[in-house]
Structures are given as structure tokens and as C-alpha cells.
Image (spheres, rainbow, N blue to C red):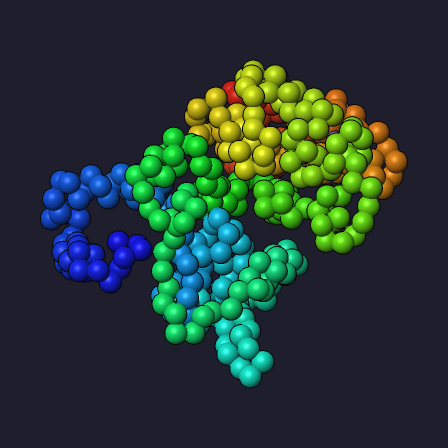
Length: 340
Ligand SMILES: [Zn+2]
């Protein structure tokens, strides 16, 4: 239906199911199919795999639909979306054509703060090369397939985890965590690989020796610095031991984030675990900057102590029912998170 929208069979299905029949009156077959594809948390796989392909932008919502990158812009740039005066605008209504070409035109319900201004720069960089194609209708593409065409095989690969699709769920979760906004913004940059590691600075033409300042044996990419560097790995293994879980975590940022303390199961504990994840990211970045700019040593034990304190102070400030002492938190973090 996504790729052959004008065919007879497609128009027939649309006429029958899209507007005329409410879910309550639908057949069991249709209800099951809808639940499987869109209804439950696990059932959002179809949304994760189906992205929009912009033509003239007249049919695609700028904020809600996935048309650039792996996530919808409302999830990726949550703090900007929340103050947008154009939340329901289509892509083509978010800018204007003039003699000089296409230019974006954003309107906000209130003045942007510093963090939002920084996010706006990132948003503008993301969409700066995009220009709507006049006279060309919008369409769909199926991301797990290299040609953008849906097939049962590619859907199976997506469902079985062979095709990694990050996206809305991850960013929705990130922005909802109980932590300071600057910590979330830093983690956000890590997840979209926009942090100023040496490899990323080299890519922008700022040539540096790209060796990781902590281990000096690999290039300082985002994934290396935060997840696979043997020096920071000590911090992550201390976190696992503190929570009493032992698992091998992926070395890419979104996989690492999504699977962090995954073995704990309970969402309540995992949300607290993600606050700890944010604290680790912040402390690694601060520790790394102390090495680069102040010639200090990166001490995994000291970083671990700081992570414990930071996560505790954030939870204490942001979660009303978190009334545990630092000693209780350090002694049994799982029990503290279970109790909130
Ligand atoms: Zn390293």
C-alpha cells in the first residue's frame, strides 16, 4: 500500500478500512493485524521500519513523521517541538520559496533558551541540504530493504533484530529521563554522534592527532571513547557489578543505551538505570576533558564514585519518592529504584 498507492487494490483497501470502519466494528483479522503492527509497544515495528520519502512535502508532517534520519523530529528534538507554533505543519509549510530558492521559516510560542538555541543549530544542520521537489508527490520507503520495498523477509529480519532500527522510542525515552537537561543533551549528542571527539573534529577538517587520550591505542571515535575504550570499560564493569548484573553490552551508542541493565527487567528499575547511564556519559566526558585540557589522569575508581553521587543527586532532585540516603543508594541501588 505504501509503494503502490494508486493501484486499484490499494484504493479498494483504503476505501474499506481507512475511514469507513471503526476499530470496534472491524473484523477480528483487521483488529489483530492493527494490534500487531501499531497497537502495542512491541507492535510498533512497522512504524520503525516505514519512513517517508519527501517529494513536495505537502503530505508529510514536519514533526511527527520520519522523513529525515532515523527518528521523527518531534522525538529527536523534543525541547524544540514543545515550543513550536507549527506542530501540525506539513514539510512544505515550514518554509518559503523565493528567488533565492527554498528557506526554512520556524515560529516559536516562546523565546528559545540557550539549550533550545543549540538544538536549533543542530536541527538546521540536519535539514540544511533538503529542498522540497516541486510537482513530485510524497511517498514511502521501507528502511530495512535496500531498495525501500516492503517484503516479508525484510520484516522478519527487522523483527528478529538482524536489522538495527533505532528511532522514536529511544529518543522519547531519553528526553523523559529524570536528569538535568544539559546531561540529557550531552547524551543525545553521543547517541547521534555529534559530540566533539577527535575523529568527529577531523571529519570537520579540524585536524588533530586522533588517538584516544585515555588509552592512546585507538582512534577517539564516539563509540570507542564512551563504550569500548579499555579504560572506560572499567567504569561500565563497575556499574554492572554495583547493580549485580553481568552482560556483554554492544559497542555502539544506541545499542548500549537500549540494552543497559536490560537484564533487570522491571521498567521502574531500568528508568533509574538509564539515569545512571547518563551520569556515566557525563562523567566520562568530564574525565576525558580533564585529561585533554588539564593534563590530569583518568581514574576509573574516582569516575565511578562520581557517577554514583551524580545519579543519586539527580534522582533526589527530580523524583519526589526517592528519599534514600547516599549510603543506601551505594549499598543497594536496585532496592532504592524499586521503592520509588
Ligand atoms: Zn581509548
